[in-house]
Length: 309
Image 1 (cartoon, rainbow, N blue to C red):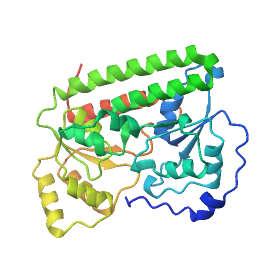
Image 2 (tube, rainbow, N blue to C red; image 1 turned 180 degrees about the horizontal axis):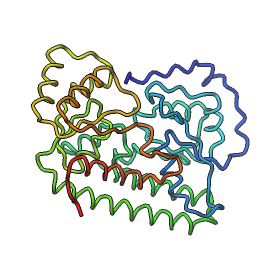
Image 3 (cartoon, rainbow, N blue to C red; image 1 turned 180 degrees about the vertical axis):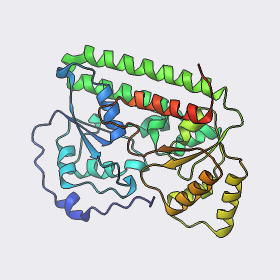
Image 4 (cartoon, rainbow, N blue to C red; image 1 turned 30 degrees about the vertical axis):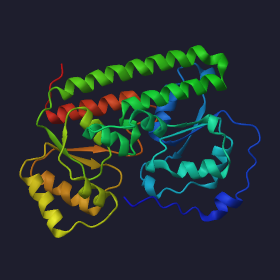
């Protein structure tokens, strides 16, 4: 992936005239993951629903090269609320919010909860949580974000408070169950490793006890499409072929030539390959986010051959 380049011509942000008028009953989110979370917290009562506008709606688009449209800007200007990661993954949202002078009281930025929790840390998992832009793999961050979004829903539709509180309780209880599941798996994955050319799901993989066999410098180069030296490529190839890697983690949406070359090497060495996308964990837009999260964990357990029953 290339570093984020926002080439929205200044005409969109500086001269794109919009007439926000009355706020709509729409929640704008950066990606499908945030849409699935937002919908999960609305409950089942039709009166408690908001429309959801997904900015990065095409899974085939690299989020780091995404350019919002004039329609996206209009949606933000009229939104009841905006929910996003607030990381390098979706920094285009910050530009959109600034371009319409959006009220920050109606914005949920997940990165704020990372900063609050990780003021100082030393473990690899803690450091990864602090630097990884794919915040939806951190259940603690999702939990805090969900609580804040629920409070915002109640502020916007106080008459539906009971519906939102019920949906929130179900969501938070599911997170607690998933965290226990992660801990159980972690107790059974000693000496198992993963190699990820791009650090998409590293937080989840570390949470379930896997050791990161990837070099951060190598991963950073691949993610930013910087070509590896012949020595670096050979060392990485030797590492994979030496069976020092239990599972290879690939980007199912956008994969560089170098990452694909390393994946081919892994497959030739019979190293299992699992896929994670950046824009959506769910196969269907109507799926509940935590159910999709749970399924990803089950898929990993099956590949790793770790029994948890």
